[in-house]
Length: 207
Image (cartoon, rainbow, N blue to C red; front, side):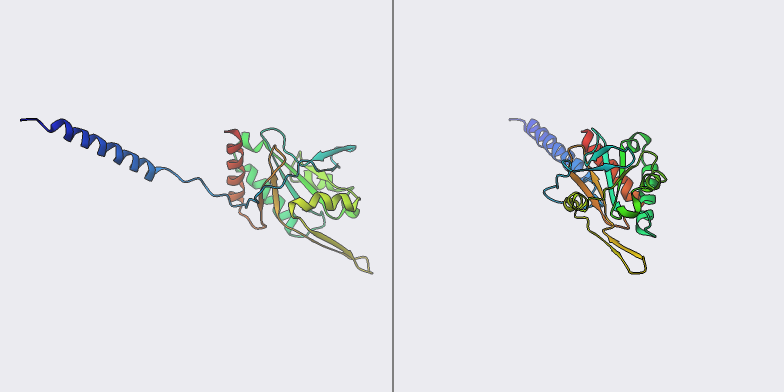
């Protein structure tokens, strides 16, 4: 009589392989979803540049250094709430990151109120980030051209009594080393989510 034990062992072995595969699939972690949102296709901003007030006589292109990220914010120094809050949260986010990763984050602030900010923006941004870049121009067309692909908007009105009213987009943008807009964060994103998104972007660029 022919023994059926080998076939039985084969079936058991196959079942064990299937069970292990299912267990692995069930135990695997899904990729974390970014808190910031991506635009498809990602806008190319690396061919644009603005005067770098932190380094007089030079321009800064909207592209990160190799293996770095460049975080960009459009605002103004007299902003009472959105601008200082956003920059403070970004600073705290980098402090919660691994030191090596944080060193790969560069920051630039573009003034939408150049008439009042050109002289003082370098000191303003470096009060948040020691190596922060202050970007600004009195060329309204150049500023508008730079802001457009980000989706950043702004408006500066001066009343008869000299009061200046500024409205601007409060989003925060991050650019990769190919010059593409990688993520956009809306105002109010948590510090932990900022840190996690930046770390994840850096990790993905290193693989």
